[in-house]
Length: 263
DNA sequence: CTCGGAGCCTGTCTGC
DNA sequence: TGCAGACAGGCTCCGA
Image (cartoon, rainbow, N blue to C red; front, top):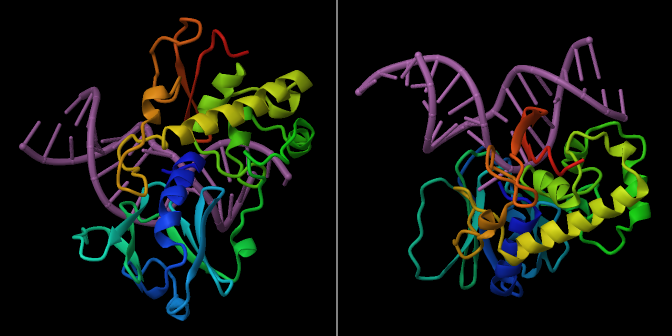
């Protein structure tokens, strides 16, 4: 479920609630989560931040609890005294004045204890980091014969883009998602980089995209689904050229694009 | 290295 | 109504 904009939203909302608070205990409810976090009790939360599609809870003493939400993972803050649902609750981090609740319908999510923040970091480059220049993007693309959309999903190149934005970005760039990425011209690579930034930034401003399961750190749905140009809009009219939006399957996953104005 | 497919899970929707 | 199949925001593993 959550991609970079959704996890960024959750991290920004949770940070002021968790940072500086002491961890009382970490409770693992779903035994699919192979997590022993007993050693974290008593230490304070230093920072909450998003890295790629992951949410990291960094402790003062160095270790870091890493939440991979995958398709249906959800993180919510519940202040002391508030009622909370126990259904599909997979883990609970109890702090001084409330609880961080981890829910996950499909149970594909993970919670991993890392030695440090750096150990929790994925291999790829952050797409919104200023260090991602057109030259750097070309370095990352070099040698790949994958189609653009499939390449955008590679977390070892750029980290944080998922299936929704991997359709929205090629549309914003005016590029077909099935173009081999290494065949993009230098001007097309600049367009691609601008589209990556614009699409992710706009989605963050809308607190992410909600179809069914995603909720932000306050338990509220995002609003970016109202602003999606092509994702989930098969057979609808292209908002740019009036063409017909098409769905194709790449690597067993849906891709949406306009065959008229994406070249 | 790349690629395609299966698998991990649960839930919803569609069509017969 | 019942049931099979497709599909869903992700990722890893395997063999070719």
